[in-house]
Image: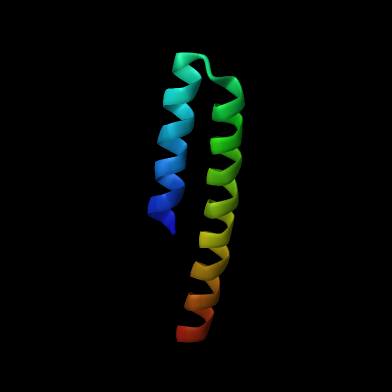
Length: 50
């Protein structure tokens, strides 16, 4: 999950550098959502293993 968030972050950065602001915004939004999901699953995993 974290690797997909990083992929979308890189896509957003490249799109922003090339001037594709709509694509960059969408990719950044997807990266944020995936990162939040990763954090939630990580915390649930920590609590379940604790």
